[in-house]
Image (cartoon, rainbow, N blue to C red; front, side, top):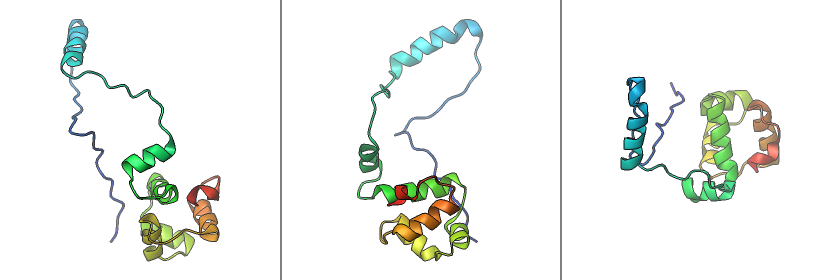
Length: 122
């Protein structure tokens, strides 16, 4: 049986720590952490095209969008295939950029995935 698998988030070797400390030590610990692990400037805006080309090289916006929206809706490819009538093999090929989505299929996918605009898949 196929199931949706969630890939663990990768932060380039960073580990999230959660621990309890006395209130009077919070500022000291924050200062110490800032010294050994300076905060990164994540406030610089990035375009969608730049994000996709950096994190998904060689893939189109539509294929990344399809995979992301299916993931958001918590559906497997098989479940999406059952909802849309599109063969699971074709959905896999669309997500991997081996098959174009096309206007009619984009409309069917948008309806099944609760998307406002089918053109996001194109």
